[in-house]
Image (cartoon, rainbow, N blue to C red; front, top):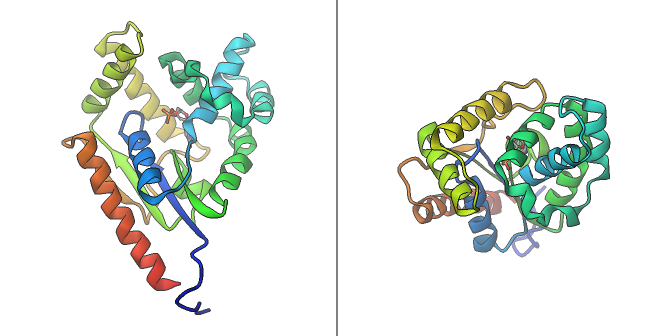
Length: 224
Ligand code: DC
């Protein structure tokens, strides 16, 4: 179908995936501003389920209880600063292995992605599972050492007392779990553009991401 040249561009979806502390969150926020689109940090959903489980004293490996928490989740819970802690990140990665938790969180993410105008979503499986039809897909990476240093500085700024060595171990464990699970493992979509931010400042990385998305947007516009 060929649309007239002045047809409204209805929905432009940007998928930003990548491992912990790769810079994908900052990049997604920058893309949201640059393209005037709402942004969803999907890691917060899993963090929220992990924190709900911990508050209830539940075992994070219990998939039934974790799925029940995921079904109770509402958008207003996502602003809680407790979701940003190191413990919440680890709990999130553990509950994220359960297929029923992922299924329970899918509709929330897909509804966000399908909103009028479009959206930016960042996570692990956005380009592969949540929005495989996204018009722009990025897979943001950085070396484990660089990511560990970034996350360590972030946690210190939040007031957490943790050694760089422990953060390195956290990152290695999260990479192995997030990439090795059976349900929607973290991996680049075949049509994602890889962006290695190891040697980049955050401004440089945000700029590179914007250029990649501008190119994808131009291609999308010319194909509609
Ligand atoms: O992006 P983050 O570090 O806040 O994510 C926390 C954990 O949540 C991550 O280790 C794995 C899980 N996660 C996921 O499985 N799928 C997503 N789309 C986002 C996060």
